[in-house]
Image (cartoon, rainbow, N blue to C red):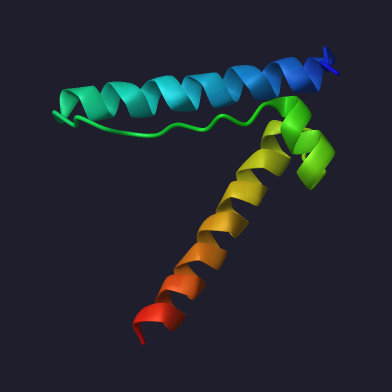
Length: 76
């Protein structure tokens, strides 16, 4: 199912812009390998209950916080 609501369109555009900016940074810095998000607004809505750019930013912040805590426990 593909969502075509204004929020979904805005969220997909936001993710695409983030990916493009990161890819450009990687190329500029001479990286030979990088990964970008493959998530879509449909994925975020279905699996994480994320529907807007604001919710996405909050979700990303929480994911980064959880990863940092996990890394801290691993290396402590």
